[in-house]
Image 1: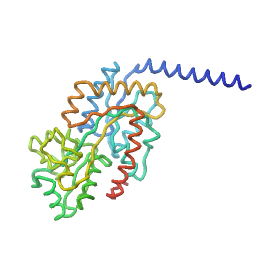
Image 2: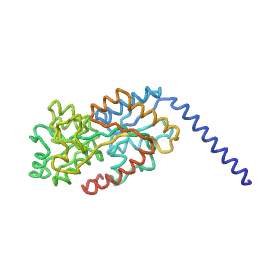
Image 3: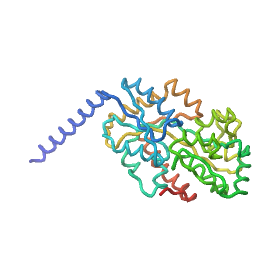
Image 4: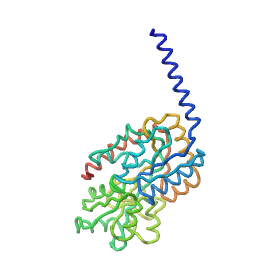
Length: 325
């Protein structure tokens, strides 16, 4: 085959692929889409994700079916996305844990978050609140630290799972305050909150979405928020940094992902639809009620952000000595 003919055939193939991709994007979606939520039902990730799914369904004119796949700090749910057909009909919710923390926390990972996924868009940044059951008898972070120092390893804290910012936020507190607390990981914030409310676990690191109603009802005592600044949803609650640990910050983030290899035209369509869904009045109201800061962007911006988060959380894991077998 001569060089001129080879170049002509290559150009034709590229053109055909481009036309096929364009046609696929125009037809997409033509059937229901699965949204994999990597944590148990009932927690804030689940609540926020289902609101997004309803809005996305209206925008794309196809059902978006939420499916909870909790376990292994979110790894099981994300791995479900990784193993799905890269056709845009299985997408997932992304959080710090399974995309940025777990690569350092777990000895073995079923996927590489930088290679096996196609980021779609950011969603939101959500701070956590450190709260205690009233029976513990503490009313602020200073009292908690004093109690923990006087009783090493006596008390435990709950989180929504290994690798979540609730978990790492607790580990960071232990390191910076020089205290010993036992971490108890649940398969989502729903079951973690249930045990915290029942007093089975005296301390919980909770998202504001799950924590605010229980703090306002008096079922839990808010000790501090984990963001760098106070949150408008709990304006009278100080930050951990204000409470004697300057520099402390542990904020959760959310986004959306698809399997690697999903056509760029479909990723772009999902990106545009996701941004529109996040900006609908219902989702905006829920985010505001949850104390969340809305964040959207391009797939490329989200991919770069994920890469930047991995070494940041690796440092926290290293300093705390946290590990999951």
